[in-house]
Length: 240
Image (cartoon, rainbow, N blue to C red):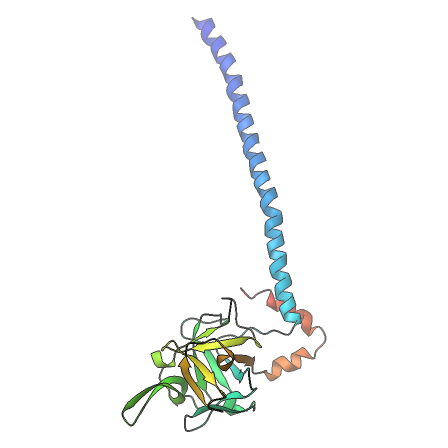
């Protein structure tokens, strides 16, 4: 019986060795094949994203970030949203002064502002843009003002860009939806210069162009040699 056992082991072991080797080679080939297929796809995706980012930088597009000072220009008339010291918010003028500046902030988190984010708009007075007011004991849900420094539901605005959930860039056309579901309309033909929140429309009366307030340091840097290259490299660190 001993010789038979020896023969059996010698016969079976090579088979096991061969099978194991083939399995390992098969796994390596399969892994390499997957990497070969995924590699170009990932590379192509990264190249597309980088190209899009660089194109945006070349075009002078600036992402709006929480805490930035911005202007809100009525797309239809060119007038800008304005807050007066008494809390009146209107769109009678095309100025780009202190009264037209608003600090835009996310209600939650920080960083770049994206379409669909809920934000606060703080005027130069420290008061926030608010939808809803009480006058003579009556509630007016279409009124827009900046009389209070509250950070509640009435001050929350959803910023929207049609057809995308991507980042809001300077120069984008945006809409501002209040807690009432109505969107801000400014300088309309039926009430020139006023700002209200009457309907849920996304049309010309509700469309604003968001503009970034240029910082002096950025403007000076833009004039320096190589500034465009540095800006392009910096853009790579943004997570779109």
